[in-house]
Image (cartoon, rainbow, N blue to C red; front, side, top):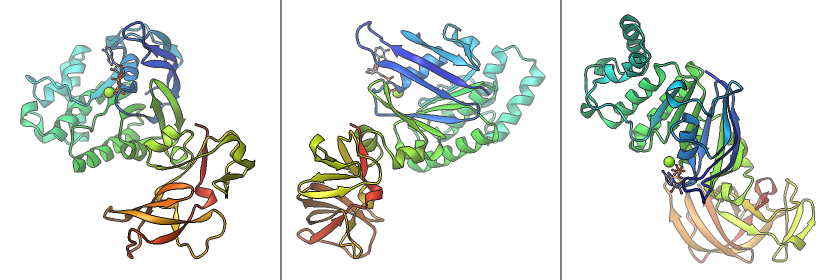
Amino acid sequence: MADLEVKNLAKSYDGKTKVLKDISFSIKNGELVSILGPSGCGKTTTLRIIAGLIPETSGQVLVNSKDITKVPVYKRNFGMVFQSYALFPHLNVFENVAFGLKMRKMAQSKIKEKVVAMLDMTGLSDLATKFPAQLSGGQQQRVSLARALVINPELLLMDEPLSNLDAKLRLKMREEISRLQKKMKMTVLFVTHDQQECFAISDKVLVMKHGRIDQFDTPQTIFHHPRTEYVARFIGYDNFIPVSPDSCQDKYHIKVAETVLATKETNSNAKVLTIRPENIALNSETAGENTFTGKIINREYLGQSFKYTVHSKLGEFQVEETRQKMRSSGDEVTLTLPAKHLHPLLK
Ligand SMILES: Nc1ncnc2c1ncn2[C@@H]1O[C@H](COP(=O)(O)OP(=O)(O)O)[C@@H](O)[C@H]1O
Ligand SMILES: [Mg+2]
């Protein structure tokens, strides 16, 4: 497997609107990097340019420091897995997996050896003679993965590979992909719009917004330190307190609605403060700083927890609590926003 580097990639389909604007990032050998973003933000376009399926408008793709931007798709040794599986319907499982090796004119005996090993590794041995129409969605996706891996690709590109599977199978397949990726030390670029999925399997996550990268970090850093409101919203923060430029008292104190809020991270240039719903404490006994009163105006049952909407002079807050005792609409409460969980965001 190989290192991938993407430099200043831009793309316009119609010569006017740029759907990709200056995308740069790199993936080290053996890393799994995800592109996370909503539908239409440019994930597939990025992947297809790297694969060589569509031309870039400008920019470069490098593999092991070698510029491959103009190398045709069939000369790039990349594996691809799509949402739609894209299996050959008239070929059985064995033949589907063998296809790439036949194209590479490998000897029959060698092909057989490699395909048998790959079917074994992906748990498909018993299905070798079945045709795609006889397989479940999960089995088809496994064939598509085996077909991509058998050529021993330098890079594996996966475009929402789990989106068409039901929730349970999606979890199972994502574990399998993660296990195989580590075992084979694969370099993988994985596209998804599912935050949980991407945090579960990625070494690093690239959050994309309208054809640009908003943040490129480890899942832990993105979860605890989202850089922008866009990233924070995408990963489940839903409390945002606007900050006006003159409200910063010093680097770690901001005055909002006559209440001084303390932060642990410096708030210079912050436009907004954010906190996750599960990090706000209601009626905390140890409450000190960052505490103010509010009134519950709505309650939702989430199974493991309750989610409350709380009205306060600082605005409305979403608060998630796992405690057994249920609170009710109309209850007066205090809210505490622990400084270590209150993140200043740039925009
Ligand atoms: N073949 C195409 N021709 C014109 N516009 C396209 C084409 N493919 C994608 N687009 C546009 O490019 C933008 C990014 O699309 P895409 O890369 O498919 O996003 P994603 O995979 O994140 O959903 C969208 O606005 C989409 O409508
Ligand atoms: Mg897409």
